[in-house]
Image 1 (spheres, one colour):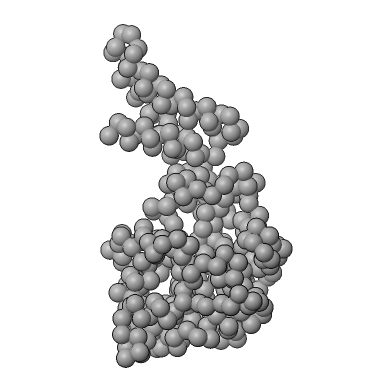
Image 2 (tube, helix red, strand yellow):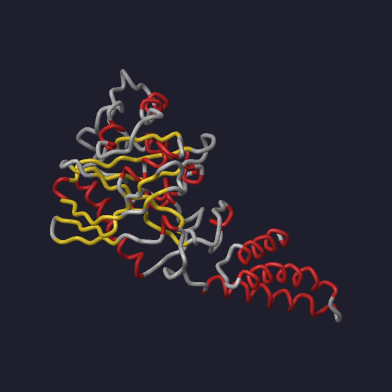
Length: 327
């Protein structure tokens, strides 16, 4: 147990946002040195108090370490969106629409402002993107409107320019949480056409009032995070838990093992009766739905204004009348 505590302490310091880096690295080396070296203190009675002081100081720093919005961010996270409602219209400022070229780092940055009519909100799609194996996937939602607009929203880590991406870092105060609010040509297109990940799009079967509530909860969160930043956490506040919290899912689903192993999130949604509805004679179980929901893109495909329609052309039919609630 002491060894685990030591590792957590070192991780908290090493993956912190302390500047300069020399201080961050020095503290991450000093903490274990103090904890281990205390056993040789004389008199021996000093050993325990020294360790208690070191752990207490670390804990106090950690819980009071504030998330911030004023760091030097990686380009794709540099400009946050803002969103607000006026009557039945939602205004979104800075919808990201990067134009990617050969790689995900070779892009032309672009943003635009848009308005969305709540009375035209007629679909919510869940997107899962796999880059290695079946256990882990990135999960996000895309809201569709009857006038052809789509707004994709992805809960992600807001990475600083000075740090490379690290999965382990997400367990500590390393990333602020960020809502990537983007055009589908950007958020889905970079995964299907540039990274060549396995991407699946599922039609959610939810009632109109639930769609609106879900969309507006995202609108509120996008706005709030500009003024009240929060830390991202791989276990408690990640892409999947954020969706479930926004949807008001029961706690038993928020603590389901498939929330951590996010590659199984779609299977969980199927068990919750949230996908489709699909023709059971043609899609008799989740495996059939899963296979049919994969987006296939030709190597010479172009991410153009017709992208949203193109990726849905061969998918199962759109959702039906909807369930009463997501609870």
